[in-house]
Image 1 (cartoon, rainbow, N blue to C red):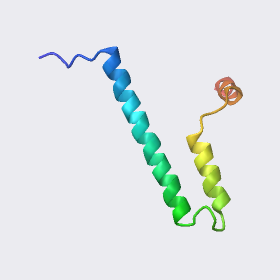
Image 2: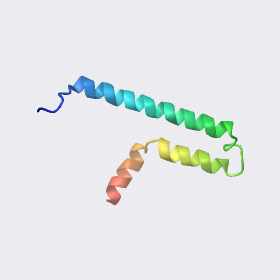
Image 3: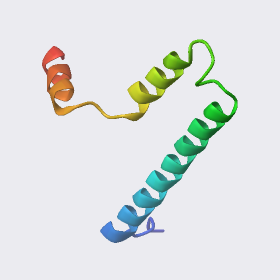
Image 4: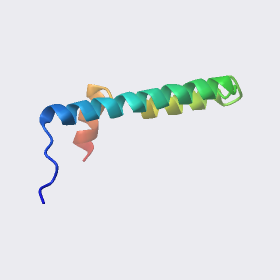
Length: 70
């Protein structure tokens, strides 16, 4: 029995679909946090900092600096 054959296009389509699902889930999380006043409450700045730190990729400088540490 042979494993399923995937073309490069099918892998790219699947990856694009997954990325879209992740983006949608992140947006839903942000809306839920804002709707429940977590952003406006005391410590809301920590919520924003957490989201930014974990959702935004490193800058080119940060990526190079991290590679140099290893």
